Amino acid sequence: NMLKVDDDTILCHRGIYMYGQKRTGKSSIMAHLTKEIIEKYQNKYLIVEIGSLGDIPLDDKFENSFKLRLVLKLKRKLKKERKEIYSILDKDGLFIDETISFDEIIMTICDSLDGEVILFLIDEFTYIYEGIEKKVIADTFPHFWKAFLQNHNVCSIVIGMDSMKKFVSDKRYINDC
Image 1: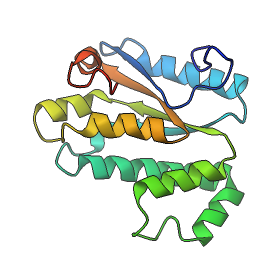
Image 2: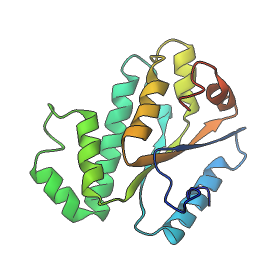
Image 3: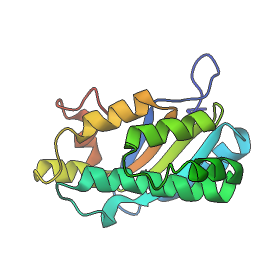
Image 4: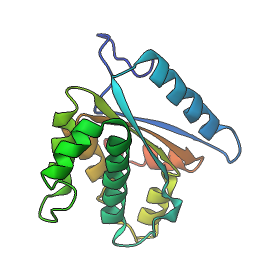
């Protein structure tokens, strides 16, 4: 029920954060939740598994690498499960035109999904906070993430380690997480 809001509409423009110690079953909970979403909310969500952020270098290019990961995973998902939409977007050059911004790509994809919400599943989200604290990721990343969720027909479920509690309660980002 956490994916529906009070008026019984589908959750959109929000992030759900799960965090805890290593080996406590967070990934298992996400897998179970994903299965439930597929069963209960068929055709309401396009579920895109981003996987772990642990293999994206924590450096000043992180945000661009992260955006690229979102687009590539979304592209693969469309190619596999929404072939008609993928074909139209690919034919229009959406995935190869380097002048098209990240926001334009996401908006175009969202518009083509006819109300279906893109649900991003992300693991090891805590690495972002660690990168910010080490000053290798811009401290504006949480602002980007909030704007991304608010400005597009998307939502997310992210997993982090127990140190993620610091991230979501950090006064600098309290309105962004």
